[in-house]
Image 1 (cartoon, rainbow, N blue to C red):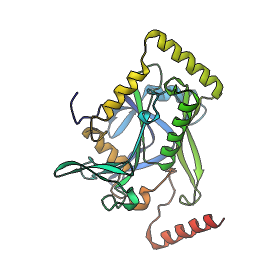
Image 2: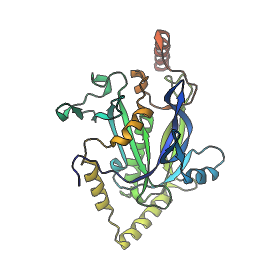
Image 3: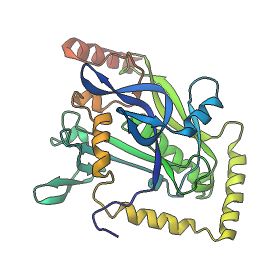
Image 4: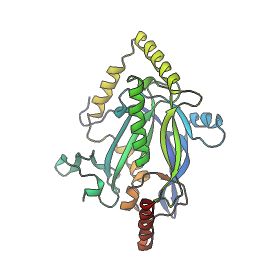
Length: 304
């Protein structure tokens, strides 16, 4: 195994809640209120839709807001990796990754391990360059070893998905990889969004089922896999070793697209603390008046 190269789950597609569009001669991220499933191939700057997207969308009425999924691993932290990440906006390469205690930072002397005070207390990551960054691998369809990758910098999505993964693993007796679940897009309003709807990703039992039914199905699938010789513990161990083999998970060819979508040059420090995915049309907080209005709204919310 090549040292310094993170070995990550094979990916055959992407799950997103938006896209990058060209506006006024610049490519900027545009949020959406529905899931999109794409391949890893771009044409004319647009990711090509995956055949599963149309298949799932036609099975619903309206927009795609739920995706049936399973997971590769029983360990929740292998399915969802979330860190504070700082990207160089000019090269698109990751330069610092931390967990709130320690970080790995690329410098002239190579990779250094340093204290990580989180974005609010770190001078290196000021200006919105550093923010929470999560990557979730899920299985869609019949291919049990090829995943779809959902990336997010949403506090709400990261926090909710982490909680759900740990809860489902606990109640199922550590059979997370066997549970039939679904990704769900949920909305809510906050003072930061001026009470407009923002969207985040949640995880639930599939529609038409119950938690008890899902747990029974998970135990049945686990029994069949054991009979066939499937070693889930060994798979988890192999994945853990692969992730730990590199300093940064995102490869060089992916990091530019990540920086373009989640770390645009016009982001402010306030944007980096966004904990949701805003609908198009939500005004950004700019200028002194905007900041004062946001502060007043926050104080009003606390008083209520």
